[in-house]
Length: 200
Image 1 (cartoon, helix red, strand yellow):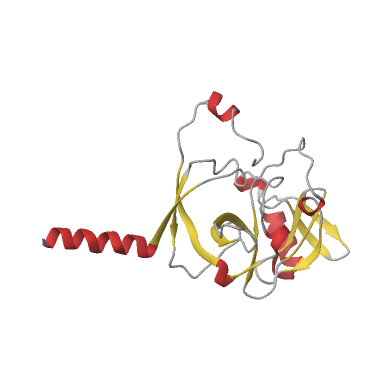
Image 2 (cartoon, one colour; image 1 turned 90 degrees about the vertical axis):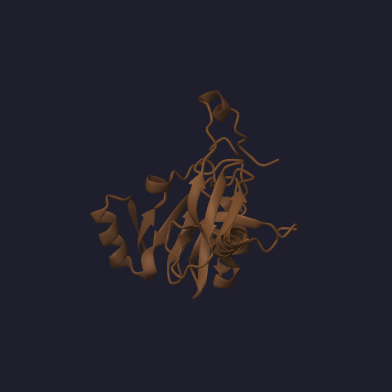
């Protein structure tokens, strides 16, 4: 009886601290694919650029949760042009330039200061499908500031993702957990070639 009770406590504790989700859709291709499993941590305080988070989608009719990547933090300035995403850290042009030069990341000079170009391509495998005809909201965004306690969330498969480009930066209360571990389904190269390029 004690072993059963202990097992139950351990199980309840696990689900209190962790969430398990099965990936459905293409918006995080190719780091996360259909049927991959992610384990997420519910009890966390720090959100950093690049984190994959489980967030509320305000316009989803089924109230599903979505997994997206945190692309900008409160105080960051961003814009998008010709499908490229530009980021100024903390709204600080000098800080942005120094970081880009230190880590050999593409940077552009604009009338609003320096911006890193496509900051998540180098490390996270963000991809575009140039064959897709996508709505303007996915290709061009005006220069904007992320408000306090809000987080800009984008899909890694930038040309087929319902994310902050449609519903804006999400408040902290809409962030439910942070991806801690990814269980990828083994796939052959032939299987990978069959991956859907867009959600039906």
